[in-house]
Length: 326
Image (cartoon, rainbow, N blue to C red; front, side, top):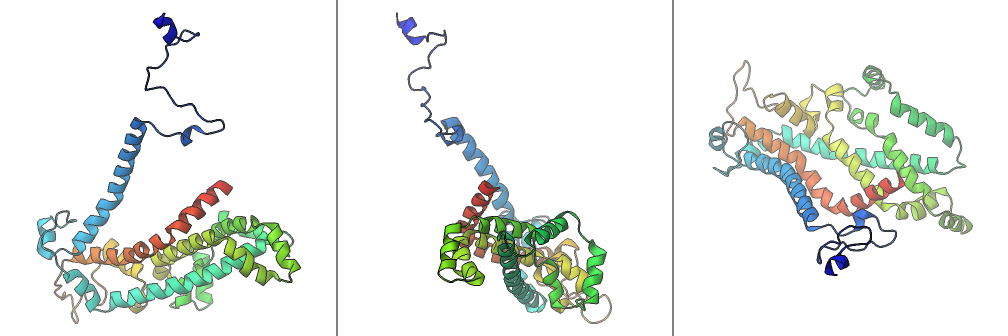
């Protein structure tokens, strides 16, 4: 009788007590159910591996930048994993010659000005394209999308910037890359989702397009504004290729990313201090060249690590909302 009670009418055995799966609520997806113990353990293992894959290289880079030359030598000239002889010599070295200090100021200036220019232009373009009855919006939208698939190329772009006297000028580091069609399209999607009733109410109150954009559209799309600001800022901060193209000879105008490119990727000596006078005489460096390289890497990472926590909330919200719209 007990056997019959544990068997279903279809012949299948019922699961033992305690392992009975919870009944899924109607309309609830499978991934919304609480994971099993095995699932939680698997997620924890995957997250642990991902965190370690990100944190360990950062830890080794930071530790190496604060390590003495002897500690780096004992580590085989590679990244230091175990603290052994901490020193600030690498940071004293890179800030003593002025090249890195100027590069930091140049990068900050380009990032602030470039991000402001990019956001103003992107907001205006996105808002204009989001209004269905705006003049020529279909033509301009098609023209902008066309550039996503067919670009002019590197040489024509270089010739245009050079003919406009952009060579060896700071604006050549900003204007050629100040607009991203992809970002504009994302912002346009958010602006189109603004409730039409709010816009109509603003019009009835006498608001024009500028007022609607400033008082209605932008306050309701703070998430995408924060995300795009971060995108543009990170792009300008890490940009080095425009410096290579348009001002490769004057190291006083180099950005920090280009100094990093020269000094770390190409293995060059620290610009401006590698030679003492004429000839190939190399100036003595108090810190290990590899430690100095890692100190420059840390300098490039600090602004992103400082800014990102403040924008993380908007960043997550904006990306998730954009994915749902997608």
